[in-house]
Length: 477
Image (cartoon, rainbow, N blue to C red):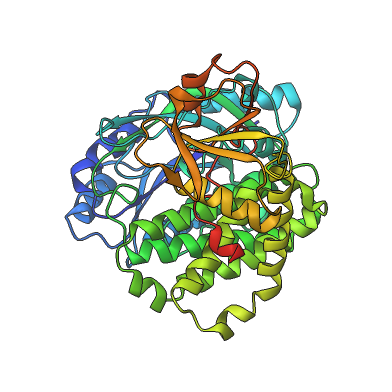
C-alpha cells in the first residue's frame, strides 16, 4: 500500500507563530509528501516569510489568495494536493515530531488487518499557551473507541457527544474519498469545521481512532474561538447550522440507528448559535439582520427531521423542543411581525403540543391535586414559580397541603403558599420536591437521610439536564 501525506496550512496574519508551525512540519521523523501553504491575504509580513520558506525547501508550495477565510484557503489546498492522504494544520499550531511516522504506520496496520484503505484516522491533541484562561479538551476518555475499525455513522453515535471532536485538524483523510463525495469546506464563513467534520463522519465507510497526541493546539487571545463575539460570527454559526440541517433533511432515510445522537447534535449546534447570540450585546443588529428568523427556520428543519427519524413523539427530547420554543418567545418579545412568524406556525404548534405532553408526563406523577397529601417544595425562586404555574395550566388545581421550604427563610408567603426554613421541615411530609436545576445535587446532599418517610422528587439527571421551568411560563399564558 502506497501512502503519501499532503499537509495543508492556511495562513492569515499569524507571523509571530509561523516559524514554529512550519518548522514542526519540516522536522518530521518521516517527511510529508508535500506541504501546501495558502496565504489568505495576510497583511502582517506572513506572506514574505512564506516566500523565504518556499525558496529554501522544495517540499513547500505557497499559494496566495484574496482573503476569503479559512474554508476557502483549505479548499485551495485540497485541490492542489496530490498525496493519497491529506491533513490540516492551523498556522499558529504545531505537530508532534513523529506525526507522519505514526499515522503512516497506523494506516499500513489498518490496511493489513482489515484489507481496506481507511477513509480517515482520528488522533488526539494537546493544548498549550494560555490554558489557564481558556479550557479546550482534545482528548477522548472512552477507550472502547480506540484501535478498531468503525463505520463512520457508528463512530458518530458511539462518540457523540462527550467524545465527538469537530476540528478537522485532528484527522487524516483519504483524499480519493473526499473527492468521491465532493466534500469541501463552506467558504466565506467561520465554523467551517463543524460542517466538514460532520459530513465526513456521516459519509465515511471506515474510520479509526488512535490515542496518540499528535497535534499541539495553541490557546491564545484573539483567535477565532477566543476573540470577542461579533455579528459576523453569529451569522456564520447560524449559517453553518442551516447547511447541516439542509444536508440532514436531504438524507434522512440514511440515519436509521443513530437517531438519538443525530437529534442531540442538531439541538446542540443551535444551542451554540443561541449562546453566541446571547453574548453579543447589539440585540438591535441581531433583529435587523433576521437571526431570530433564521433560528425559526432551523426550528422548521428540526421538527421535520424529528418527525422523520423519530415518529414516536414520546421519544422527543423536551430540552430540544424548549430550546426552539425559546426562540419563538424571543421573536414575540421583540415584536417580529406576525406574517414573518406565521410561516412557522405548524412547527411551533407541533413543538408546543409535544412539549405539553412531555410536561404532562413529568408533572402527573406529582400528586399536587390530592387534598389528603402534604407536599413540600424545596427552593424559592423562578424555578418554583414556573413549576407551580405550568402545573396549574397543564394538570389543574393544587389541592394538597403545599409548603415552600428554603435554606434561609426571608419571606412568609411565596406564590400564595406558606414558607418555612428547611431545617424546620416536618419529617412526616409525604413528598419533597427539589426545585432547582443548578443546585439540585447540593440540595439533595443537604437533606440526605433526614426524611426517611418522604418520597424525594427531582427533575434533572441523565435525560433532562437543563432548567425546564424558569423561563417557559409564557408558553402557557
